[in-house]
Length: 422
Image 1: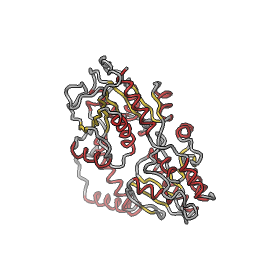
Image 2: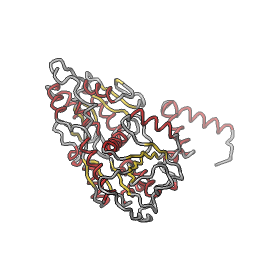
Image 3: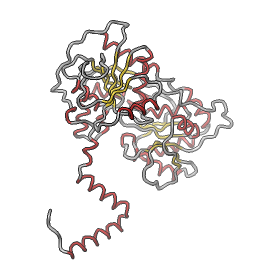
Image 4: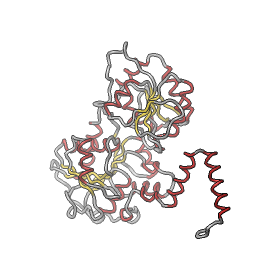
C-alpha cells in the first residue's frame, strides 16, 4: 500500500526473493523487467505518440475545403510535400523525394514541410536532406504549432499540399481547415497495420476518410483502400533503383562466387517480420552451418548463432553485399518491401511472405515466396542456397527487374498537376 514502509524482516525477505528471481531468470531478463516497469510508471510511451493533441483530425468533423480557381494548363505550380523529418537511408522518404524531383524536373516549385511534434531544428533537418538527397532543390520548412495552410500565414504559399503518411494527413486536415489549398495523399503502406487494433490503428485508418485525392503505391495498398475503406484512388506501380542496385560483375559468371544469406536487422520492427526472420535464421543455420548469415542495419541483442554484422551500410555498400549473397529475407506486412526487388537487381534471391496482393506487386519469376512462419522462411532459404547454377539464376534475376522510378514519378506528377488544374 502506498506510503506504508514494510518492517525490516519483510524488506529483507523481499530482497532475498528478488535476488533468487534474478538468479533464475538472469541479470538481463531482470533488468529488462525493471526498465519495463519504470517505462509504464513514467508513461514514457506518450513521447512516442506521433501527433500534438491539436493536430488530431476527425473525418466526421472536417470542414469542406473552399473553392480554389484551377491553375491554367502549362503554368508553374507550387506544391508542398508534408512529411516527418528524414534520417539518412530512409526508404519511404527516398521514394517520396523521387516524386518531388520529377515535379522539379518539369519546372514546378516544391516546398518540403517537416512535421516534428517534438520541435527540432530546421537547419539540422535541412542539412540531413541536402547531404542525403542532394538533387532536391526544394525549400525546407519546419512547421511550428502556429503554422496553417491558408496560403498567407506561412512561408512559401502553395497551390496544393501532399501528405505522405497518416500523421501528416491529420496535420494537413487540421491545419488546412477553412482554406482552399488542394489536398492530396501519397500512400506507400496501409498504415493501420503498423499497430495492434487500438487508438493508433483507428487514427491511421480514419486518415483515409479525409476526402483527399489519394495516390496508392502498388496494388496491395490500392485494394485495402478500395475494399476496407471504400474509396477509389489513383494507382501507381513500383520502380527499382537500378542506378544503385545492379550486378557488379555481370559477365564474369565463371569466377562469380556467392554464398550465404542477408537480412536487414532492426529489432522491434514487427511489420518487417524481425522476430519471424530471427527464428527462421536460427533454424536455417542448423540445416546449413556452412552458409554465412550477414546482418546489416541496427544492431540488437546478441544472437545464439554465428552472424556477420555489418552495421549501417550506404546503398552502394549494400549493393556490394547483395552481390556476394545467394539469398536474403525481404518480408513486409504493410506493402511489398522495396528491398525485394533491390536484392533481385543485384542477383540476390529474396524470400518474401506470400500473399496474393504481394504477388500482384512483385510478379518476378525468381522470388522465393514463403508462408510467414519460421519453418516456411527457413525452408525457402534452404531451397534457394541449395539450388544449382546460382550464378546463372542471379544474372537472370537481375535482367528482369523494373528499371528505375521514372514511370512512377511521372504518373504521380501527372495526378498532382491534374488536381491543381482541373
